[in-house]
Amino acid sequence: MKERVEKKIMASIQLMERHLSDPISLDDLANEAHLGLRQFHRTFKQATGETPANYLRIRRLTEASQDLVRQKQHSILDIALKYEFQSPEVFCRTFTRYFWNTPSTFKHIGSTYHASQRMPFEGEQFEIIKNGDAATPSIGRLPAMHLVGIRQIQPFYGLRVEQNLPEGESISERLMSAIQQLPDLVNEKEWNIAFRKNTLSSHHEIENLFAVEVKKEPSMLPEDLEYYFIREQPYAIFTHSGQDMRVELTVSMAFQWLTQSQFYLGDGPSLFCLDNDQRFSEKLYIPLSTTFETAPNWWKGYSTQYLKRLSGK
Image (cartoon, rainbow, N blue to C red; front, side):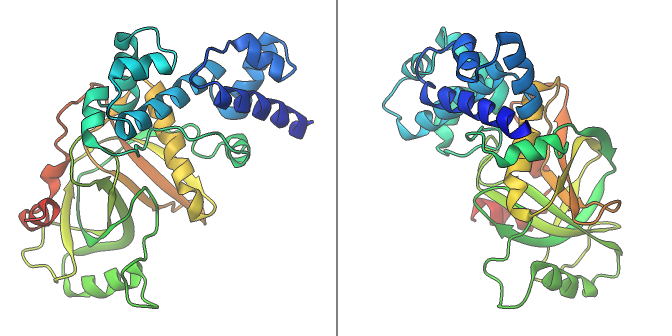
């Protein structure tokens, strides 16, 4: 029974994918799923975590965001009309709500990747949504933290980055070796701080600081380590469980929740840490704000040395 329902929903999703730049109605989608309109709406939301209209809207916005970068010769009006938005005003307002940048700013950034983009729905997501993983967060606060860690760069969000390390040496082992020289270590709980690289307004080219908490900013740091300060603020707290390769899906679902909530993205990096209450599980912290911030100050937590490296000077 469950497999038949999922097959029907996937049929409607595939129809959406074929008509992202064409008119299509909810009746068309319900007919493709062989369900009545009301039943289709309810079943689609149960299976995917959102309404058919919202799924289609975000998929169209995602494709539009790709076009903004890849097809710079096309105007914002052209792209808005291509993806079935009634006017450039409606497109700009909706785009800004989901991507925290206006279409013109996003076009200037020049990246085809953004954490709140929606890739086509795949079968694996049915199981994640059914199990409640990352679908609905708790809202909490983290106290201000002083952290020291090792910086690594990767193209997208992830929990583990092992490139550019000596063979057989993990980041965790390298970090634990370096912090032995610090007398102010509080505990050895590891944090992965994922923040935006090179531009304050984009959400691509993720840099990770694999870190541990210390009591205060160290006066001297081993060469391998960087310092970062995180101020106290509210977070949406999601659970990631299972294989690390699925973390991009967890992050995507978290940002989808955020774009549909009453919150905005807060001023600060996202954080990962192991869940103390459950094995093979990790917590994802997304900073929250009740107001839209056009000039984030997340970079102010960096040490001067780190800012110089970040800017390439």
